[in-house]
Length: 341
Image (cartoon, rainbow, N blue to C red):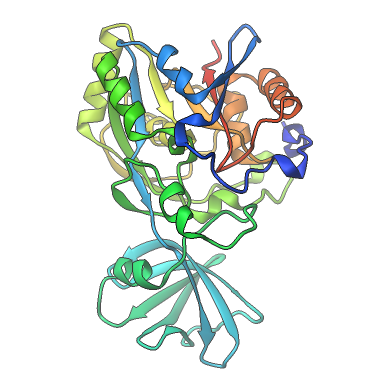
């Protein structure tokens, strides 16, 4: 298949610029395997899962990864931390009129600076000063790294709404957006119903927004992301299988973590890096259902959901969503999919 096979027309006004007033008030498109589409609200998910099922969440926490400052030459610079690699070091994208060379310094506050120490492809290696944890520096001086298609500057509301209510492990520079629809009350209702849950961690990188540069999908190399699947989650999945339940991944990042951990055989607990690129023809080993938002045209995530539920069904579902004025992308609405039989 080619990149052009995953294109669709999206009216610009359907790109959600702000979250719904309430998390669980978003819309939910139920895509039945039969091809039927049901227009629901997100809270209806409570009726679409049962006590045998297992919901798996990505508990990564978005960090304030965007820094604005100046180069030692005086020019303005914008840094987007891709990942924190050590207590005082990071890989980052840098936007400036002229790329800084190795050895140059960047200044973000009177007491905060970074030295460019190397390059890794499109990313810059940075070492920060002063001698305090980089996560603390980002929390004090950084901005919420809203996606490029959200056009407003980060507001106070974005600090809480571009974050899941269960986020606990800092390290992501983009939110696992399917989880943004859950509020505390809905999680409590799911638990009261007896629906089991488990966690994985996958630190979503800024590379998730990078466009593919070739129509030949075989030439694409995914950005690398760190993930961890706990032993407890492996056990919870085995227990769900034993009772005849379904494994429901909350978001494509959760799915990528689980399928990466099963790429060499049975699902394995542990932490690793993944470049897993899922396209139609991929054989899923773990996930039975996928809760996900609507993804960008020609994106790797649109390819992933097409692999999961079938290219033609996804094409029809997206056409239905556009025609019925669903809200798209990070702050948009959700859809519930079943794995292609």
